[in-house]
Amino acid sequence: MASPSQSGVFNQPPDPRVQQFTESVQLDRRLYAHDILGSQAHARMLAQVGLLKAEEAKQICDTLDEIGQEIATGKLPLRVELEDIHMHIESALIDRLGDVGRRLHTARSRNDQVATDLRLWARDEIDAVERLLRQLQKAFVGRCEADRDIVIPAYTHWQRAQPVLAPHYWLCYCEKFERDRLRLLDCRRRLNVSSLGAAALAGTSLPIDRHATAMALGFDDVARNSLDVSSDRDFVLELAFVLTLIAEHLSVWAEEWIVWSTSEFNVLRLPQAYCTGSSIMPHKVNPDVLELTRGKSARVVGNLQSLLVLMKGLPLAYNRDLQEDKRPLFDSCDTVRACLELAASIVAESTLNREEIAARLDRGHLDATTLMEALIIRGVPMRTAHHLVGTLVGEANRASVTLAQLPDAVFEKVFAEARVNLDASIKEVLGVANAVAAFQSYGSTGPQEVAKQVRFWQEQLGMTTA
Ligand code: ARG
Image 1 (cartoon, helix red, strand yellow):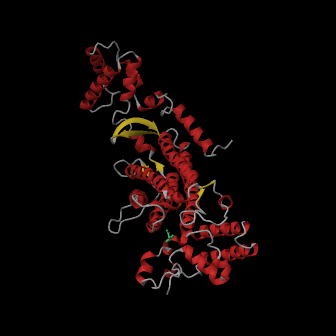
Image 2 (tube, helix red, strand yellow; image 1 turned 45 degrees about the horizontal axis):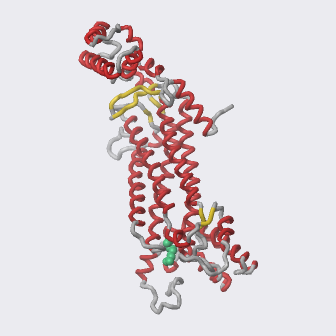
Image 3 (spheres, helix red, strand yellow; image 1 turned 120 degrees about the horizontal axis):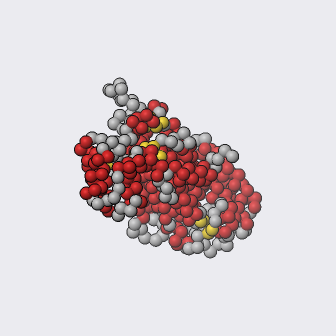
């Protein structure tokens, strides 16, 4: 069968393998609703400028609504020889309206059409991902009240570093996802420009009104250069990048919570609803959702890589290579949405093991840096204080005790040897509770600073009860 994209210039039908090879409808069918919106805006504009009769535009728009319904309910058969969703919709229109249907593609090419559809689709995806990011942020902020007095060790190099309030940890993730959210909105702003009417690449000699279609479709502007816009997939790359960062942030969180939920750490209890068992070991409750969140991020990174390589070195303007942008973009959106959705529930429903955390807080000298700062405030030069506390930690390690448990005499000996005029009363600054309370710098984990941050996020996310 001849392909509908074959004009009269062809005297050979396509090889059936070519139809299989070149079709994209299995993937781009999901653009159908946006394709119909774009076509309806285009038809109305054609009527406004006199290229269609008002009556014809109405017939086209109504019939496109019907076709949309049929696609939504799976009634419109998909045929490889019709190549993509754009050809399916146009061909269904022509089947029903004959010559009126044959006028729809006036002053339009699939090049500007597919770019328009993809922008409209991406815009909706961004809005959906943005809502999911908000939901995840709310889950983190929602924990802050219940966990407000829990102190947990924070790490560098996976070594115990300093104590922080649990809400400090939760808000740390809010910040990361907020940057992702702002990047998404920024990407949305840049992609919300109409490609429609660029036609194949050079524009058209027909008297179209690109601003009218742009406004009807909710675009903020019209792309200035037809050649640019028919080759442009920057917005696909940008969105894929933002999604990659979200996936990476989720992966970091997942890795952390996997470790925290091990018997070795035993800091966190994951709800069993988000875990699965083992086919051989009856005792296992594995954190599979977190592991897959970490694992799926690999594919999202790979999708970005595919897109970057796809675009590298393509000549202007449209090339069929561009059809390959959909699989990675769709996959990244689907994957990140699925991960975000489950992440919000896991964050909201997991619990910290208060007793276990508290029982081990005095390991690892989480208060050593506080002691050093106490020496500094009493006039000891920073490097000297750093060295002295290191010496005291060495003594404590040899005696298998905490800094607070070291005999006063050891402190006094170390101070005396360094000609530091202080005594063992400085030990009163020690202990994890004192260490946390002592933090006061802006953005630190000090209780007042954290309370401020919690209030900030509650307001940002509309979570204040007042
Ligand atoms: N299926 C194609 C795509 O997704 C539509 C555009 C085809 N344009 C063309 N000149 N062959 O990119």
